[in-house]
Amino acid sequence: MANAVVDPEAEFEYELQVFDNDVDEVIQCFYIWRTVHAEARKNRRVYDLLNRNAGFWNVALGSIQANSLIALGRIFDRGRDTHNVSRVLRLAAKNPAIVSKAAFRQRKERDFANATNVNALRAIDELMERAKEPKSSDFKRFEKFVEARRKVYEKCYKQIRDKRYAHKERTDMSNVFAQTNIRELARLVTDLRKLHRVLWDWYRNGMTPRPSHLRGTAGEQIQKRTQKFLQSLL
Image 1 (cartoon, helix red, strand yellow):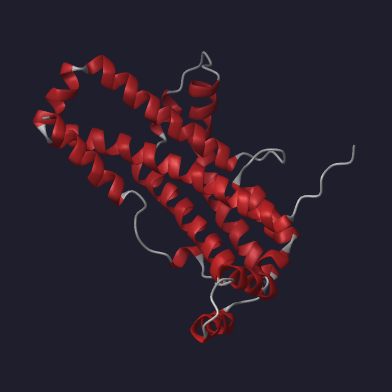
Image 2 (image 1 turned 30 degrees about the vertical axis):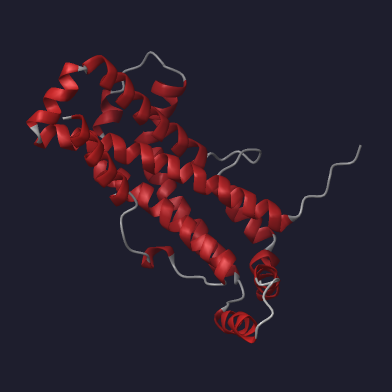
């Protein structure tokens, strides 16, 4: 039986959604873990709360930390048969028509399919005026952006993921853990969120901004919700 033909656009949108889900999982886990530890350091009542239920919190926070690194590993996986960020970029580079102006107009016409007023049609025309055709330099720029973040991940976080959480190897990991940096990891996960936003905006809105031009921290709302939750337990 012949393999079914897969629509490149549908496949790209699906892979982009998988990437979004993995990034969200990493960010949720990382910022929950980070916020709980930060609150325990600066708030004695939170510190005492965690100590009174140390067994539970050790398991919970350890699991959250492990899950963040496992999800991060999925994002940077190099396998061609797995869902990862490189697959998203390869699909776009191999099928540039996905982000062409013609494909963008078709998507917007589907979005406005039930709209018959002049304003809806004018909105599509206005979007088309600012839409950009993809260039080979666009794909190279995204690949370079990902490879720079992959180096950060592979420096030490991949080793922790592989040797401690995935396989539980009998080896001294102290030197590896000494290389970890909370601020560095925060920048890494925030950059992944920015990358998804850029790719989605490119696909859905015809825009090709540079990832480095985006601002903001990915975990601000998660931090606030975690702080609120801890306060509710006091």
